[in-house]
Length: 121
Image 1 (spheres, rainbow, N blue to C red):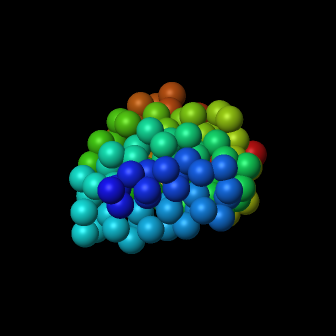
Image 2: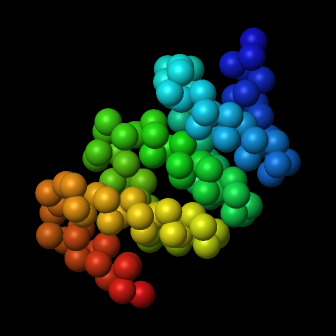
């Protein structure tokens, strides 16, 4: 039942509630990854949140969930760079993730160029 409450809290209309649920997910993930992975759809909805804190925490949690699936996380990063972010702190974190991806992964030259263009804006 607590799983249902936390999942509902992630999609709550109140930014403070959804942000708190995302932070709880970040802290719960190392203990029970499967529990938090069930929220992936709800978390991806919050990547478009207007609240800077919610947007940031959704990005952090989504990265934790998709850490093992580089292609899936790459798609998320590509979408966020195309759409832009509503949060300055999320934009900084997005730049950090892009840097990490470029340094640690062999990327398609077109994708590298796309990210380089984004970083040079």
